[in-house]
Amino acid sequence: MRYIDKPRAKNLTDAQYFVQVVLDNLAKNEGITWAMALKEKPTALIGTIGFWRLIKEHYRAEIGYMLHPDHWRKGLMKEAIEAVIPYGFQKMKLHSIEARINPGNDASDAILRSAGFVREAYFKEDFFYNGKFLDTAIYSLLQSSL
Image 1 (cartoon, rainbow, N blue to C red):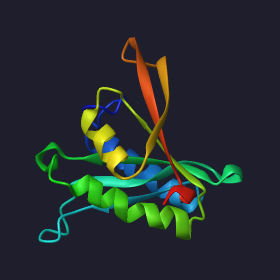
Image 2 (tube, helix red, strand yellow):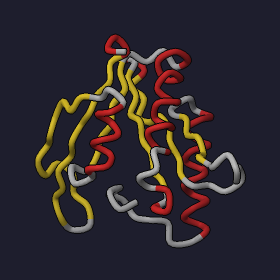
Image 3 (cartoon, one colour):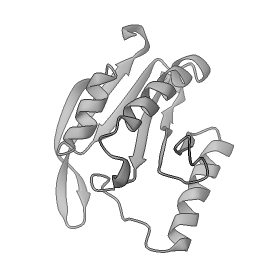
Image 4 (cartoon, rainbow, N blue to C red):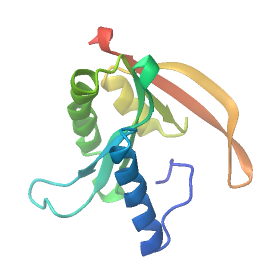
């Protein structure tokens, strides 16, 4: 969560809260999140990926993802992003998928670009976290661009 600007889970209660939010979003049809695991160890969570912040009237959702540092730079997140994009466009009937990242996250920038996302905006100091203002880069992928 180096580049995810929100508090990290400090205990089991925090982790359970995250799981409950995921389940609530799914139940209310406001998002979907998948657990990521390795084929050889399918019960060990290594990350998550999903769609949230759905704007149903505009057929748009934000993609979000996290991966344990032990698995960075192995192509796993790119594989996961490429697996969920068709779900978003075909099953969820999205027109566009948005990604918001910390501009310092060069790996996420590269993964998004390699998956066809285009950086559409850069907001300066639009996000206040941990006592300081942070920038946000926004990427988008249109169904028509595939």
